Image (cartoon, rainbow over all chains, first blue to last red; front, side, top):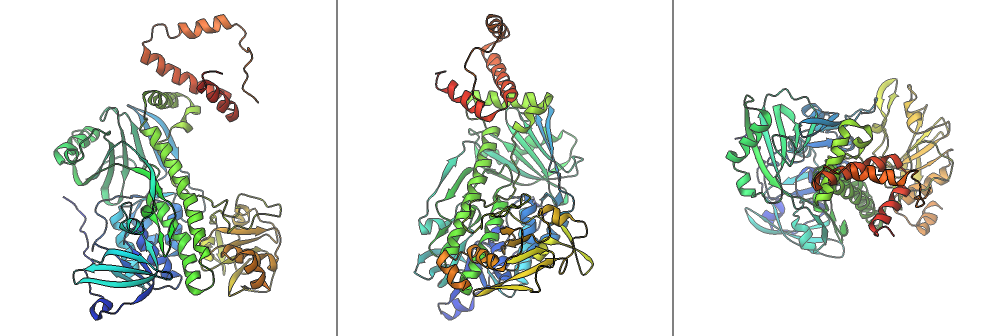
Length: 545
Length: 64
């Protein structure tokens, strides 16, 4: 039924299981999906050896996550794997919303000019995972262990003990830290007894991957109540290699087993595409969804990321995109703690920042779901009224909500931020992810984000210092001067950062702004770096002395 | 701006008659759908989020 050949990664017995020795590893990741594999790559990029356990030995079945937004692409670029994803995937900007048989509203994600990565790509999850697996395999710090199923997890004071089952039987491993990326039905979450609460939606969706040569443009098309599927919604997305993804809303009363049968699915697709379009069904699945999150992203020695930590409805592509950003936030903090440069308190900021982002995602995806699946007759009347009015009047178009697409949530309230004291220009407030801009290095074109991401980085506009780094307690922050190390030939960097001569920004290892000033002051920078790495006020005074 | 709860319509009887007459030939569902469109049109015209919140609250409390 499918044109994609699923790779088999192959089980190998580990030495520690063969020899019956209990080894303690710094980081063990549970689950080799997009989030677990990204976790391995990011921890390894920060110098930490990682073991990944997965109970299977292949990639995701079916296209699943599909849409990847600009911020995850920037993160994967930092890890050296975005270019092949964009090359293989399908870039798109335009979304169209239809109500019954008419276009109601259309949006353009309008990627800002002079950014390296597109606003959004579509790529089947199996292609993405295959690329991430290849990248992990090429990294000597990463060991992928397939057919390794976690049976139990016991928390200790400074490690967790894992019982793991393989085709060779059961053995024990220890981990200083566990990153649980084992999805919405996370076993690890049950093992640690964490709460996972929120709202379930009484609706079912049929998702199908369809191979066809069609002349639909490369756009996101969303229908409310179309003639070919009355009373429900339908979403169409183009993916790589002439594979199209179609989501049909079925309603709560649909029988999932019945609806999955090809003799039920094919007529639905034929009604949509017309009698003359030839297509082949690649994969079908039925899902229902919930919006919920774990009570705390950190449970002792276990850190939760991706769907294991939060689940959202699919409208807005906020699942995998959020999970990748969890890892972006976690990996540098975990590496600092393991190197002894920060206390475990830094990991509590992982919960603070990413639970804040998860709540924002849940809010957005719940609102989209309430629009797509009105719960009551009066709310359906309002929804239909919006769609009717949107055809004729601009005012109603912003109210149409077929999913607000994933953008990074700024950590505006984070304890790691140093609040602005100077009168600063522009929107790059502490807690915001760094905006990219074209720059020049040694006279050659380059991208600003490539300067960031390797530890703390201070960027100042103008030749304000002779140094190349600033020592901060047990570590150092790199110092990059615009006009010495990098050039801003188009002026876009200064424009995007509201910069004047002397303007100084401190970026965290995940490329977020931690602090900014109108002038260069080493003492202030030192304090801000210590604050952004989780050192409390007493700590900061001692380390800065 | 606050939600204006003082008389503000110049010709109240005429306005009320127009509102009722506009739905005279509609069945209940058609009228409710029209009401939804009307609320959205008026809400956008008002625009002020604080006023809209006050109006929603006032209506929800039974007008009191």
